[in-house]
Image 1 (cartoon, rainbow, N blue to C red):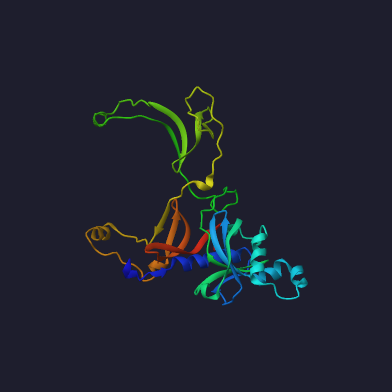
Image 2 (cartoon, rainbow, N blue to C red):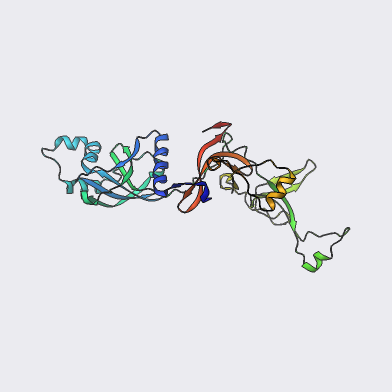
Length: 307
């Protein structure tokens, strides 16, 4: 793969760019820049729903936006230590209308000297209390949710396996198997599986098979266990990354098997097809991310349209 001269993607730079895109799609003003050198910044650690994150905000900006009436009553600028005390005393000093930045409480609140401010570019987000600079992003946890009827994933192919039961056979018995032998199903189960996850049990009816979302054994005489809710969004999906395709005859195929090189187009690394359970869902570019191969998505196919 080194001959392809893959573009390197820095994990932190990539995470910053992705966060800014998410915030902008949500209608928020956000960008990437260096923190201006000021002497009135507050630093804090937010205990978020998905994990901790850290940020900065100018103390006097926060005071002006959050407590405008108090600012008008002051005859002289409020000292920075007092603003820090006010920031600590307010139950929820920041209003962040971004799901991934929701928090339960803030900790490690302190003023920051200009020499301790970040030197590189960090993402910022405008909030009702002022501009917040994210010095540490929250962890990117997988967002799970129900797959709705209008979801673009509704046509994703999934294989439903109807398992009648299992038996165990020794190696010696398997060697002696022959036509006409009858194998007993030692442990009937009659369960439905998708991607290795049991969705329920099925029973035979005159019309076909009837499935029930329960974890009880189909052959058990005891009452069935309560039905369980199936989270379709948590089902694992097999992703394949297709580098290229070639139409070959048997003669050319035999030469490749014998050691002949397979030709690749110069821009092959920029046309990687991503397939989910065999269905094309995206197009991307092959890159190096944190010492591993990765595919940066350039197009995502949703309802037949490119995004």
